[in-house]
Length: 200
Image 1: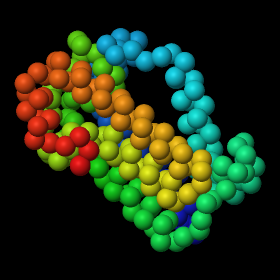
Image 2: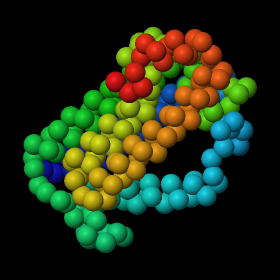
Image 3: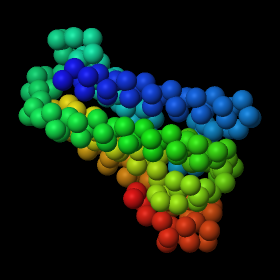
Image 4: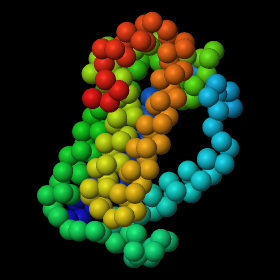
């Protein structure tokens, strides 16, 4: 159904709007949220162009149904849908909607502690209330759910593979982040980790 195929791109724009809106709000308050170039936990410089290329391909693929584009950069074998099921698509749309609600609550409950990157001299306050009382990583949980929902709306090898790759990459980043949090928040974080699950 056309409505279902449009929703992933619309949800992407909503997601970007929410995150950028929060970033602009915090910057106006003088909060430094970016750790670009100063990360305590370093990332390979080659990962950025590769990630950007894959994201552009992903964005192109979710935009095609909206603008009725038949041309595909990728081979048909990985972009062709594995099956057609309205019920699966509805489930995907519902998961995407839930992920957006979780993201909105996360950004609100972050308050002034939203940070991108892991930097020793720019860590925010440890947030353990609100949605963080139910999940230690609601931001990343939201993203995993979102990519999963997209894969259900467009159940092709490309989107399913991308969702699995995104979930795996997010999980390993969380493991790095947990070590960082334990080092800088100490017993406060250990107690929080004991009470609240990583995802749900």
